[in-house]
Image 1 (cartoon, rainbow, N blue to C red):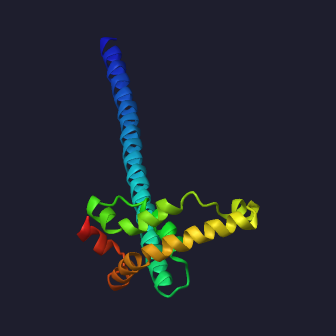
Image 2: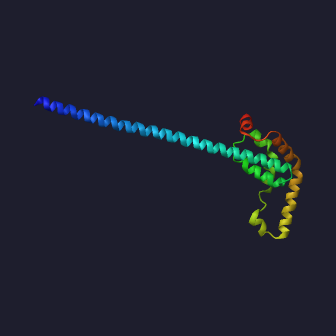
Image 3: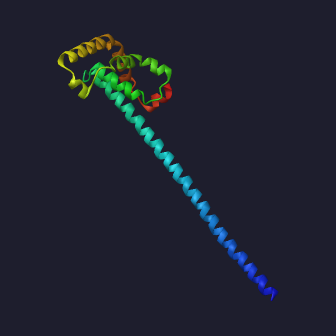
Length: 164
């Protein structure tokens, strides 16, 4: 009789051990799956961030080229570049180097665009146009020097890493 009870207890312990082992296996598998998912998410975020930076670099190069080829106004090119460069963690040295671009951007921020521009009467538009021409005339040379430098050494991750 005692042997029978001991055998049943041993059997219960064995069954419970197997159940516990299976549950721990599931926990370990879940943790491993979470680690893999987290790693994949981080890799996807890093890739997305890299693609964003590559897009910004490509856009900056296109804007510089367009500005040099007179395909875009100085003010418009500087505004577009400044907005794009605000999305990059630039060093103080780089910000200082691109100061003329940021200057034009800050000097023209108050000028209405798109629908607001269309809502202005012709006299107001003319006044803003004259202001734009004056800014562009004053800043043309320093901005073009920067654009030539960008054309000679385009924005790229390789150049960006070396500079920052």
